[in-house]
Figure 1 (cartoon, rainbow, N blue to C red):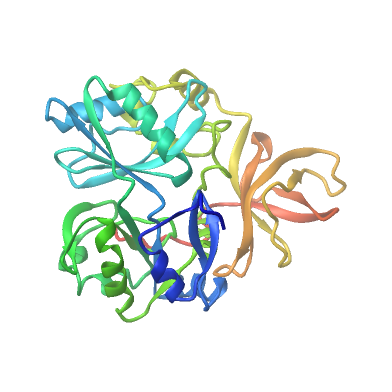
Figure 2 (cartoon, rainbow, N blue to C red):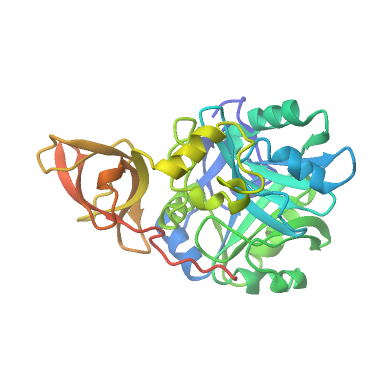
Length: 377
């Protein structure tokens, strides 16, 4: 550890709970707790886990006109998704793109009624805010709220754990967003998640973060969960990790994220294009791409890790792709991975071979997610 690493509002609580702390995105973060990665993963799938994600960035965007629609129109110049059509109290997944159609970051965008709330990745938050401010400064006020806490409560028991502390949580459905309070602390509360399970994300003042975390951990069947299980859970959920599975060299179409571009922003839509790299993204959506992000499942129990090359043959003569994320999936009891492969080898069921310590391990293209989602629709 170095003095340069930042700490979230829950740093002291992590130590009290016995967390193993590691550097991550410039922060000291809990990798796992005494229960261990496997137990934390399976507990989240079966019951409920509480994650500290306070390292992520929270940004508010308000139109100078006072009309949230103007803020939505302004932000649409940077992202390929429909924000104007996003109703108050709802949120949507999106991406910031560059002029080549590459993904600068993926994010969540919520219409809070008066303004927009954008949640961005920790490693990208400063550059994201800089980009948004530079592009929108003429029409919007952009406020960084990087000092706020952010918690994620995930698992099939999430509603039962949160409802006693926040009755309004029980009425929410997937992708809803409200402003309420928990244990007397004012919060923004969304119902979504990256594990594939039902869950909530809680944004709140740093001063109240530990109070709320302790109140949630006091509920039946809630355990603290670290970065290790967070990664294996999101991988089973078929969700991208920025910097691994998506980055500036991958476009939304290559990354199999075309579903996040709504009809009005597609070719022929009422607000077609209008964002950086739109010409590339729209052309790829129309004509196809040379490579695609796919799910992979390996034979045996040894995980195929990021960076492993993928081949069409067992002797490694025809390279067709690369693994970008891989781990043993505790819930599916098998190694799971995702990566990019040539489009003509991307069909579900296609047999491939991954290079693993000098050997070529059989893998197959599998549909994602690997675990059926449990969101409350």
